Length: 69
Image (tube, rainbow, N blue to C red; front, side):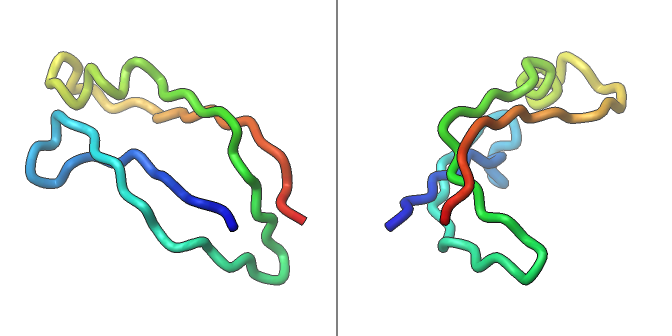
């Protein structure tokens, strides 16, 4: 069984992150389910959340993992 833990923006305090535990997704015909082993967030994300940067930018998250068979 795969336990999924996700980091999201707290809707009550947008400057904070919270952990949520969503249900395991069901891949469609052309989808691939990947078990993520590592993830990183662009440091700009935290600056935007804290209000240090208000300009638009492309958000990037980097993941590493293996397909679930």
